[in-house]
Length: 472
Ligand code: HEC
Ligand code: HEC
Ligand code: HEC
Image (tube, rainbow, N blue to C red):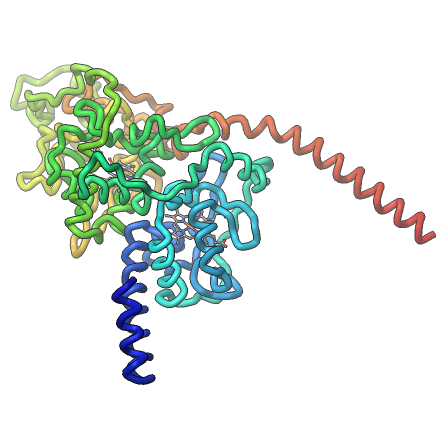
């Protein structure tokens, strides 16, 4: 800030022409800072309809919530349709407390519970970027949020915020070094890792007593990323974490699909190595609660079961193999890439299915979702693609039973054999994942809504009668 005002004063002394130039370049710096923060915070992924196709920041992208889709709004500087008329204070209120310019409450699908950690300087840079570095889009967002009663009553969020919003800026931990603190700031604030990786309570607020311990995210599962060596990422090296965040893969460990692939694609790949190293250092240094050892069966298997040997008859034919359709399906649909023994291609472009977090966890959601939706991730020039076998697949649609059979085969032979998948599990993942209690409770609100509507009608009729009488 000091150098900033110095250069401004110097420029003013040198004359108007120079002053204008200096002011511009100062702004450029701030705009660049704000842009980097917007990328680290992934504003684009949510606020652009069908990322890559919609107009940048024009809103309309639907975020599946257990109670219905919540659509993002236009946050370009358009005065009529966007946030062009927001003052910096109003912008700060939206980001930190979830309160819109008109005073209404935002749904926490907008991660203000994380952005509340942003400092005044960071808010200032973001605001400058959105006002001066983003092109205004003078049209409304393509879709508007329309949740069922009672979730359409935004005022109820005031109560929610009172209980769950920790409205405080990031404070460094003096017991930790600079690098770990930088990582903590990124994880808690812009990176909003907790939005996906922290489990939510019954009212859908992040339960920070289980910070980053893993959470169901619709059809996907955002795993435990605490330093717990058994359940979390404690036995990953810093370099493996950096590589995963930068490219979406840590060879021999995990690949990013679904929402994590989107976060890597739109945000994390653009962080500097220093920032990624800071995140990794923080994750590995943070205290964790150990939940005991993983089940024995979650330990990667050494014996590599090879479907070719059984199916092609190199071994004495197994009379039962035709009944074992998971194996036959694996051979037909997966082995061409992941190899008949599940070991993946030589360079691991097609990853091994053992030593793979998608097949080793207690929660099989990511295995099922990967089979249904595939992997589609663009990082730098590289496009990583696994076809999905869900509805509308161009390689072939698999039924719930077939997906369950393949998943069970993979889990039994290459992954966590203590886990099994039913047809109903696949159906649930297809339908967007298990619904939290709050969403399941929604139907009981409908009688309440009917009662409410009757009262409103009675009131309207009453008012109308009174007016009619007065007029008469
Ligand atoms: C995980 C998705 C997500 C991310 C990431 C996200 N937003 Fe939002 N944002 C939303 C949703 C959803 C709404 C609308 C919520 C509603 O209607 O209640 C919203 C609303 C807003 C609003 C209120 C605008 C208005 O008047 O309607 C502002 C301002 C905003 N976001 C700014 C940002 C900025 C800046 C960033 C990045 C720092 C960001 N958002 C990142 C989902 C997101
Ligand atoms: C939009 C939701 C979302 C956000 C934000 C997010 N993650 Fe993830 N993350 C996921 C999901 C889902 C997976 C599982 C992906 C898969 O296996 O294909 C995952 C996987 C991971 C893994 C691999 C874990 C394993 O055992 O396989 C790591 C490490 C990780 N995330 C770190 C982070 C960090 C660090 C941040 C914040 C800087 C972050 N994530 C933010 C959703 C998210
Ligand atoms: C055309 C080649 C191809 C086929 C066929 C294929 N995969 Fe994949 N698979 C990939 C690629 C590529 C990746 C992602 C690699 C990366 O992210 O770097 C992947 C990733 C995975 C992952 C890890 C995903 C995650 O989120 O952690 C699993 C599990 C998986 N595949 C299982 C299967 C199963 C089961 C089948 C058969 C139904 C199958 N694959 C068919 C190419 C393929």
